Amino acid sequence: MQVIKIILIIIDIIICLALIVLSMIQSKEDEGLTSTITGSSSSNFFEQNKGRTKEGKQKRWTIILGIAFAIVSIALAIVYPI
Image 1 (spheres, rainbow, N blue to C red):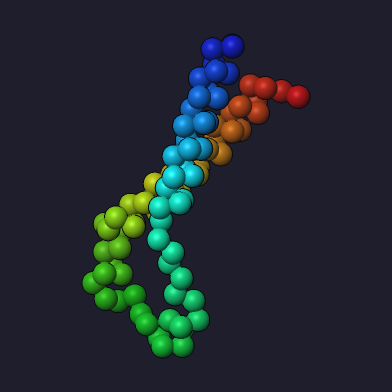
Image 2: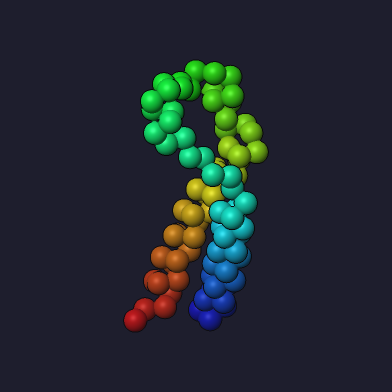
C-alpha cells in the first residue's frame, strides 16, 4: 500500500508541474466586449480549425491534465483517509 501512495504522489506532482507550465505558456484569449459589439463571428477558417493549432492543442492538454489532476487527487484522498 505504501508503494501505491508514493506512485500517486509522484504522478500528482508531475501532473501539477505540467499543468502549471501549460497554463503559464498559453496566450490570453480575451475577445471580451469588443467582439460582441463588432459582431465578429466564428465562421472564418481560423476559428473553424482552431483545435488544430498550437493554442488549441495547449488548451486541450490543459483540460486533460486538469481532469487527471482531479482524479489523482481524489485517489490520494481515498488512499490517505483522515
